[in-house]
Image 1 (cartoon, rainbow, N blue to C red):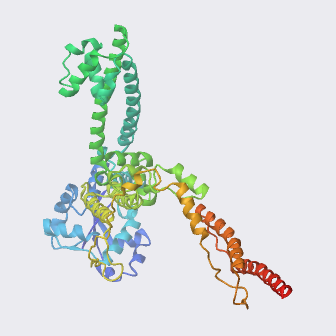
Image 2: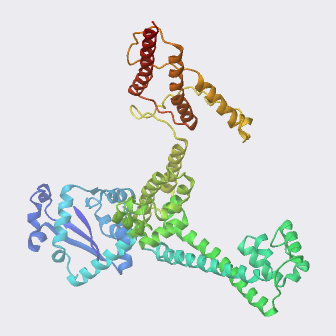
Length: 533
């Protein structure tokens, strides 16, 4: 049996001298305790050395992906094909299947073979002759770095430093453009102020100023390439009746130089945005699909690199850019922010204010997955990002439409909704509410209140039962006069809107006071009748 063993320096083919030892898997490691014991088990048959690190990297990557490299194919044809009846022990079952299909060699992969490979690796310096340990360690280190770069896709096309610089430059250009355009509008506004109100687009404004120059040239200038016909006619009409001041030719020349700068910077900004878009599609296609080019580039710039962004959890991605608000909220013990840079993504902008927090949380989770896939994955397609984008849009529609689903049960069946009934009342317009003149005069209202007050009102509760059945007319008149005064006061209170309920005790006292004078009158009458008799 032959053994294929790969090192950082090259391919080694060993021949197993005692195959019976492979049956004792648990005690096989004892046979490789010393180089002398190892040489009794295996013997080096052929060693194919790599020419340089590039060849070693190509061989290593091919072996990792389960493919046959050029150097491996050459070794197998030269050495192993001569002894086709021998079995080939390999460390990777997938690679063994490929070798069997292409070269028709029988390959073996088992726990005993894995233990054998481990023993050979421990005693590699003693088994492989003519290879200095220092050279082997240097080649191992170089191959390890090269293989790590390959696995993490650190190729020139995947350098995210360019994205960080491009998005920073784009933000700087926007600030400078705003300052330049504001200065240009203010400067030329002294000469032709009406043009700034008519032409709102900044680039069209600068191009128009560049072509017009002095406002007296508007009538003879053709602006059809820059402005629509209606706007051009309005500009020519405004130039005839303009209220602007006269300026010298030197002033116009300086304004035109400023307009040239604005036009050049605007054109360069468009070119830079296209470059950034292409770089983002190449480096982070899935992140670009989910959050867009600008937001994705700002997230990468804020984190420092795509790999650093991939290390962040979704909760951190959600609030990247809102660190000040987060620490202020933690310090003052208030609510923490729900979103940072991710707020400018199109999916968050589409939602209502109520659902922005939910969508930003879901978007951050999907963006975090997409970033890890872009940074550490082997594929460079954007299929994962498209699938997650579709899921997020479906969830967004569900939140906006307020879909009702059963909380318990299978969750798939829609909840039954009652039949819709229009319950709103139709309100008619009341024209009398428009009039501010009262329908009745205050004097008439006061007379009505006095008439109501003159009507006698019997007390609700009687304090004592009157023994005498017959009461004279004079007593009745006095009682009515005594009761009229509190009633009038009560009506006036009602008119003001204050109607306190009088307790029962007060009513009883009032009745008792009215009964006392009636008894005195009766006694006086009786005394007079006795004297007359």
